[in-house]
Image (spheres, one colour):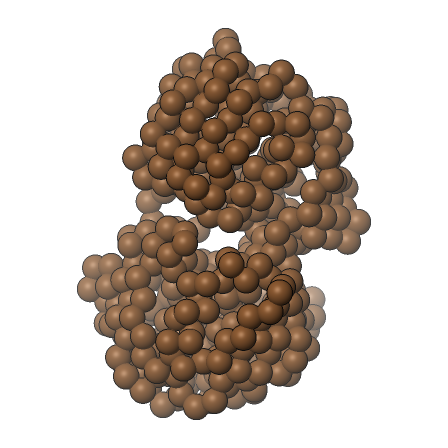
Length: 421
């Protein structure tokens, strides 16, 4: 299994470009099922989760071809409505085929999804909304079987603003008869990107980014070309990388409005953050100040940035309190960070981080995607060499992370069974 070897204490300087958003690409790939013919997606990150989703589409009968970061999806061969358990367990977001398959075929069968073990992410909100749209759902032996003679519009109120449920219901509703309202919808920017893609196909969706989304069903959809928005979590990770190495980095291909909560916390920590039209420059000198963080649904501070910020808070001159309100098991990185000298105490969903002057290099393991990112950041700042194993988790969400950081001056090497890459 591949691993990273990082020689720390290297100041990052230069320019880095953010790839397309993983959390936009995954639902948009599944939404390609809904059109008639071929869809072309630009700036698609070539990461493990996206490759798995492409495999899911090919299993269903679609053709998926790559040209660099351009992906062409031809759904004319689409024929299956069932996803194998082995594919589903590779990635939780595979459940996003449920809505599109119901829209096209009126039936679907999926296994309970897998993915990072960061906490409970039940599908009850997906199921509740689909049932209101006339879908009969049975759960048996770890499978979800859904069938509808006709999808009809419905007034759906989500108990919690679930991103996945909002996406699945949007995609099911575009070909339903009548109007669907999704109340208490998730507001993440990736939902706006999905709305724009669906409307490019000929759908009638409006309100994404607000707490009520309206979808007026249409009879059929066509083809489109769409550019994926920049990945705000990758951008945030690079911002913290600049701060933790006391560097000076310009991060290009961002949407500044998507970075507001992260920028605010870094500024509070004493980091210089200068936003441009589609870029941000992050400069840092000296140790950061301690700040308190509470993760919240967008536009609050993202849970996907909590582990990275913990690595930064480990080097402050004070004590920080981090409250994780989204996932109950999102502190799996704590034990690994402790190996590197991080002083942190966890009580339930609250972590108290007492800053230290320096971190130690260590032999650690990535337990999930963002935990892996936090270990990379800690390794960049550590006194000695750090070895990070199980980086397959990092590959799920970051495109060529080692290559991008080497171009900024980091000494990070990827070791695979075939040797150094």
